[in-house]
Amino acid sequence: MSAIVKVENLVKRFSEDVLAVDGISFTVEEGEIFGFLGPNGAGKSTTINMLTTLLRPTSGRATIAGLDIMTRQDDVRRAIGLVPQDLTVDDELSGRENMYLQADLYDVPRDEAKRDIEELLNVVDLEDAADRLVKTYSGGMRKRLELAEGLIHHPRILFLDEPTLGLDIQTRSAIWDYIKDLKAKHNITVFLTTHYLEEADGLCDRIGIIDHGKIVALDTPATLKRSVGGDVLTIGVRSEDDLTGLIAAVPGVISAKKEDSVYRVKAVRGEEATPEVLKAIWEKGATVTSVELSRPTLDQAFLEYTGRSMRDAEQSGSFDRVAASHAARRRR
Ligand SMILES: Nc1ncnc2c1ncn2[C@@H]1O[C@H](COP(=O)(O)OP(=O)(O)O)[C@@H](O)[C@H]1O
Ligand SMILES: [Mg+2]
Image 1: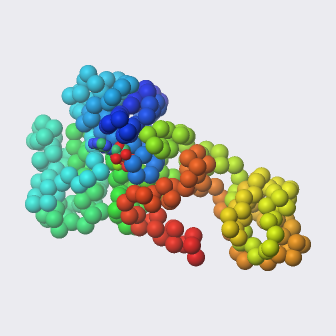
Image 2: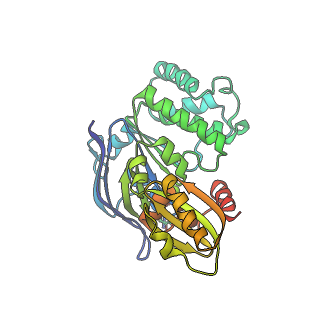
Image 3: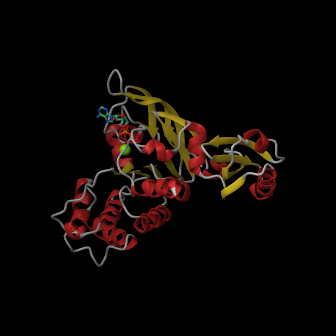
């Protein structure tokens, strides 16, 4: 494998107080699905916009397929496909007409376009709906059309900015399958951004966690989760006393934190530590009101690296149904 994207110390400052991208460096290997995971305002779109030559960096450098984004803009644009955050398809045209329009924009010869368009519509399962006006499409169908459009000129790398934003969970997981399928069939590299933890976890080979314009961690999802260090045991306790010290001293426990009447306990092996911790609490005469054992998640990794949970970080941002339902579940 070799690096298809190389980024060195890239910076975008919009104004005195808005430093959107704060000196990021990373590489994307040919053939991987690479994701930027971060809350709203982290600098994800700004990074994509710089790499796709829509926005001029303040400083730093980057190459795509060996082409400098500052000096070889036209060549970069031909080498990449882009599916931006906002919908780009024309509502008043059919799916197939949109595809032909896109092919024309990229000067794809007609006979080649004809063949490729049918093949791409097939991969995203839009053959039957291809002659309907896009305004009759669902959100998921539009997104599938955009994915297909992004590949019409055979780019080596496809940039996807929040590819499943606002879609319901079933549609999102279908889109993930289409992305994997397109990647495999077209032998391309994918660079995507997301603020959905499940998306980064399930889809990406490697993830850069981005917060306030900086990459705070970069690795495979499995390694990021492992780096959290152990399982997390959450125990609700009714007691007059603070049992933090007692719990922290149980063998196998790495650390214990108290938040109101809930203890967050990290343990090397949750299934072994749980009975010991419960025993220690009961021996103190305290009542256990709830017990939950969880394996490390990307949300915990995010918390570890940024000091706040992804869900909390999102609260200042736009409404997110999934985050909201998670928060509701946590409150119960
Ligand atoms: N054109 C712009 N002018 C000024 N500030 C901007 C502009 N675009 C983005 N920003 C700011 O830069 C920061 C990063 O934004 P963005 O890259 O869109 O984040 P994300 O895509 O991760 O949600 C935010 O504080 C945002 O308000
Ligand atoms: Mg964005």
